[in-house]
Length: 467
Image (cartoon, rainbow, N blue to C red; front, side):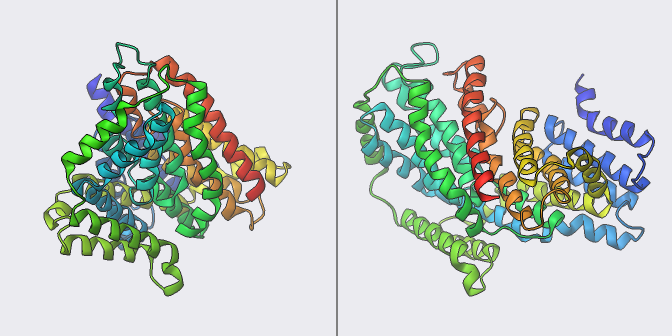
């Protein structure tokens, strides 16, 4: 069974490649699609590290010269993702997350919110949620943000009230757990840089459809929807899945004690705060002054290393950041290959044939709903993005007016964070919060269905009014 799992992507790719080439698709396109499907299978079941899955995929395609007869063209295609600005923006943002963790600024922010908002259980929910929201624009790994920064602080709260997985989990622990995961799903859609697959999606959209979505454009559309949804989330959890304990006077005292142990805010924390604010300003307004967002991020990263907020050793030994860089760079190349090999136009034509005659708005809403619901079959938002977003863009192209396409693309990309709420495995932090043991699997699926329906309804509303 272990060997079957390890070689299943290869087996799937070979079996698919041996099947007759479908009508309307060239043989090289069919072989490319076979390898692409094998890569997606590898991303879903992870028999080997995900970065190695992508690296193997692009190298095999280039070796077989499926993009172009020229070896040089195939080489340039295989390495194209590593020259991509969005990929390096993701890398730099991972270093920002490291700065938050290493300086202790992320922990201090969480503790301060608990200190001032934590007298009531509902206030604790908002403290957990706001901790995530404050960090979200600068931490594209919601796993690092939610599971790595928020969870270690939040997990200390329930035991103070005798709430453990085995003893009165509904007292407070289950509520804190659900707010923790549901809030990070909303913040992951709130900002372009709050979820790494958001950035990947933007790049795939540019590769497949030819238009770019900027940080400010994303915020302009998503913030008006996500802010009310974010503010409602802790209250909705309080109403739908209420804690039995309504007051939590011990929490502020505990946070005060922890802050005392940390001591006064350090110079490096202040520097990290200044760098974070500077980066945000440059991401929002830099385009007006000809400053690219990736260049701004790399510049801030350089300053962080030069001033000792993080060390160069931290940069070169951050396995997570380098792993993501290789992983996303190869996936971007694979996704662009779908278009170069003629696969997108072929698949888009087939799906579009079944949607012909529908109103463009109906098509847009149906695509958003289908894109969201299909995440039930994915344990990785990255795999979901890579496998489905180019296909959905190709499907939409002939069915909606050209002026609607960029807005529909933003709706599809904007739903990636929200869909992480639907299952215990739907997004990176989910297994951490679920693994705390406060919420049973059946209850998690039930809550995921309720909140997933609410979040999807919000996206449909935005699609209707924006697209």
